[in-house]
Image 1: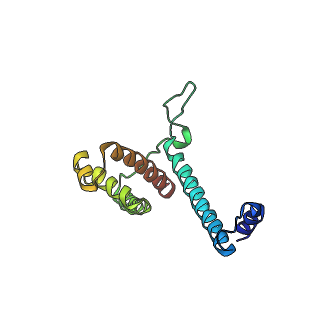
Image 2: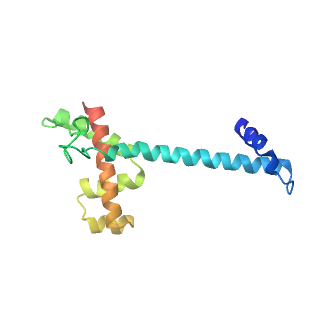
Image 3: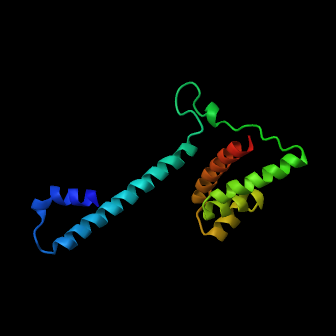
Length: 148
């Protein structure tokens, strides 16, 4: 609200009086709200993008794993560890968006073909691989945090 009044004060000279002051203030408020959610959406995209950078992009190690992002050894040899791992995997899958979770489960766990997944979820093959890439990195990071 304060920012709305501040914006109105700064642009009071541009108010032409074609509408009521209340309508003018409400339109400023609506634009402020839209801007806020736009910035939040961009911020969330930036958080997701950290999953997309597991490799060095320049220097002598181009396309090699960044040490902090490299996959760890997931010891699932005995049944106790396997059961615990399975619970953690289910939890991590629940953190994905419904669409990403469905695509990941169909492609990896149910071993469906790419064509089947694309037809079932109604996505392109390029979109399938983008979703799979993001889902794999997010699941891997989640499992490594919860499992280790």
